[in-house]
Amino acid sequence: MPTGGTLPTDHQAHALVDALWAHATPDCGMEHIRARTHPDGIGIVLFIRAARTDIAQAKVRRLVVDTLASGGTGVHGYSVTFHP
Image 1 (cartoon, one colour):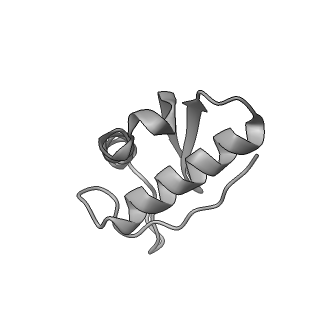
Image 2 (cartoon, rainbow, N blue to C red):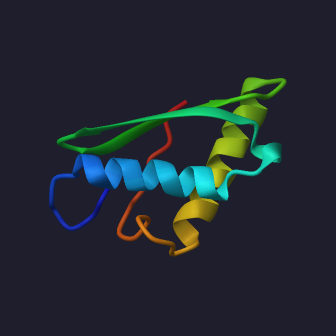
């Protein structure tokens, strides 16, 4: 979710998706991303190929944290809440 009290835009959602794809490696097992804006932020759903749910969740956490930590275009000013 963008911080600073402004509502997210579709452009921000697309930029976040692009950044996630740019940081995904084959080891991530990412197959698809969906992102939608809503008043509380940007909701993303990642479809990850993994043998178990806990492995998929760990891959998602690593990808999202690494992407936001990169400081790349489109990833500034976000806070993250993970939901299983």
